[in-house]
Amino acid sequence: MHIYFCLRRDACSKKGGDSLKVDRYVDGLARIGVSSSVFNSPSELPDKPEIGGVVHIFNTQVPFENLRYFKWAKKNNFHLIFSTIHHSHYYTDKYHCDGFLKKIIGLSLLTYIQALAKELIVYRTLDNISSFLFSPNNINKKLIDESRYVLPLSLQEKEHLENDFDIVVKKGDFGIIQNGITYDACHLNPCRDREIDVLVVGRVEPRKNQVKLAKILSMTDYKVVFVGAENDNHARYFDSFVDTVNAGKNLSYVGKKDYDELQEIYLNAKVSLSNSYFEVVSQVDLEAVTLGCKPIVSEGSAIFDYFQGDVLSLHPDCTTSDVLLQLQNAFSSAYAPSLKDSYYLSWAQVVDKLSKIYARCIPFS
Image (tube, rainbow, N blue to C red; front, top):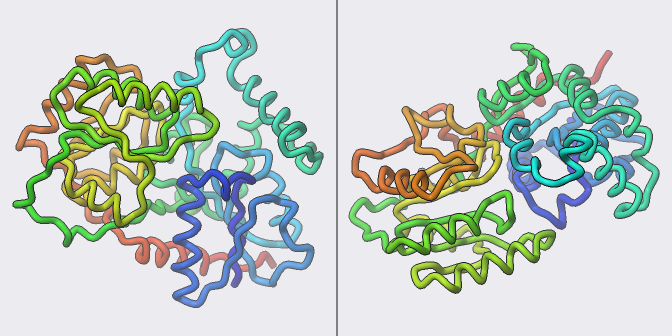
């Protein structure tokens, strides 16, 4: 069996949850003797693929590319597996609601036009043009319906899929493939003095809401650290963020950090704060709670069934008083969030689950 991982075209230049997951999948599968290849464009796929392959696609956000991957899979008699990584339309619509054009023609049509313009102007190709005969929602419904397995990250994401696309994901054709836990909790030292009060981790961009958080937190006495790379597509926002941090005596920005450095920062922080407009299952939230840094998560996520009991959260449109109240609640000794055992898996265990799903997929007769 050979696994064809099929990603968006900018997955190499703009690393995200999908590409980082695939990096771990490829390494983990290689350790158990399963071969795989990663493709960033349908045009890269081979004319004569290996017999016994499985095509694994990602993201409901790139339907026009995924449709071509699907057609290639069907042509070569391969099963399709779809890791949807789907953001709730309710929250994405709220994020994109501003702007004259969006109000006049609607977000769905504007998104379609922007994708088509990117196809012609940025990528300068006609390869995917036939996909634009269909709407994004209809493509995603078709992909979900015709996939051998649909693999959301959580039960809540499955609910978002069913609500947003007006479908029912069949019980026997889906499985939860959660995000793995990067860090080992054995590093925890309950007596350790955590010097950082509030930690905000994530790529610096409007969706993550760092400027808003920096302005609010600069009015407090908390020691606050921001971690994350600049998003090159939002240079003006990044400049505004840096100016806001520099103006706050209690704020600092340390840029992008590797896994070992980030682990040390989590271990030195008390509370991890997220106010993203939308997420699915944030790796930041999982890593924080694993290392004893108490999370406040975004309500625009699909992570809530990962936790035992309640986890503190903030709506993307929350007020200053909302943020300050949830921080006060997070610092309480009564707040001790933890993950369910069934969601507390290493990446090796996640890959093992995934490999068993692949093993059920044989070439069509």
